[in-house]
Amino acid sequence: MTWWAIDVRPPAAERAAVGAWLVARTGQAIEERDDGSLVTFAGDEHEADDIMHELGRRPGGAVAASRRPLELVDWSTRWRDGLGAHHFGRLTVTPRPIPDSPWCSIPRWRSGAASTARPARRSRCSSVIFRPVTG
Image 1 (tube, rainbow, N blue to C red):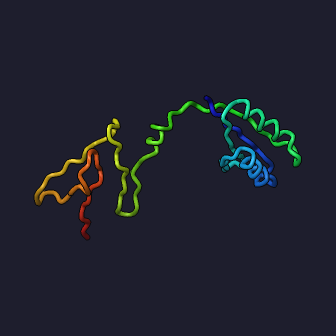
Image 2: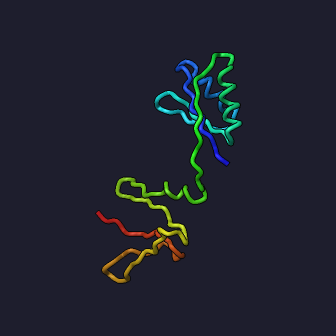
Image 3: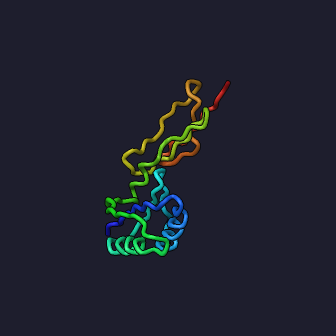
């Protein structure tokens, strides 16, 4: 199944009304782009054509729109690409690696005075380490 994106370019004065219509029509959220365009999605080409046809005969006037197929993506794994470290001042928060993933690494630490790093808990592939911060 190929999903379709529908790029809609309403006049500025009608942007909110067209956006509300798209949400009501598709039952999905829309993307509001900085250039004033709106993007909605359809589950197949036929539905995308129906939405574009309805946009062309709206009571408030026709709205320019175009459609494009979206690449097939396996979101069961692709969502991981967005994971990354977040920095909050001196604190860095990193996501916990997923076991059996190719980027999973098990943290190493040494006991004794040379290193004060300790695991938060022992689990396969846990990357959470507490380190005392001084100063």
